[in-house]
Length: 80
Image 1 (cartoon, rainbow, N blue to C red):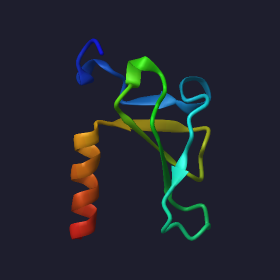
Image 2 (image 1 turned 120 degrees about the horizontal axis):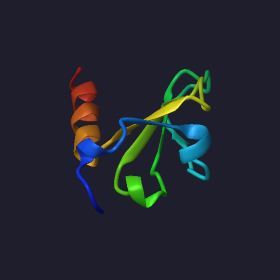
Image 3 (image 1 turned 180 degrees about the vertical axis):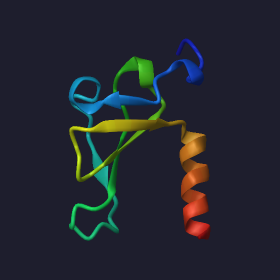
Image 4 (image 1 turned 90 degrees about the vertical axis):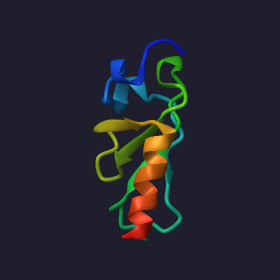
C-alpha cells in the first residue's frame, strides 16, 4: 500500500468507487433504515480501510476510517 492515509480522500462517491462493495448493517438495526452501514472497500487504493455510509442515502458519500480510528470511535460510543 503506497502513500499515507492523509493522502487518501476522506469520502468517496458510492456510485463510482464502491461498486461491488458488500454493505453490512448492524444486527441491532430495527429495520427502520435509520442506521449506518459498513463495508470493506475492494479497491487497492483503500485496502485495509472501513467505509461507512448512511443507510437512508446509499448513493451518497461513504466516509473512510482506519481500523484503529473505527475501533476508537465504537469504543467511545459503547462507553457513552
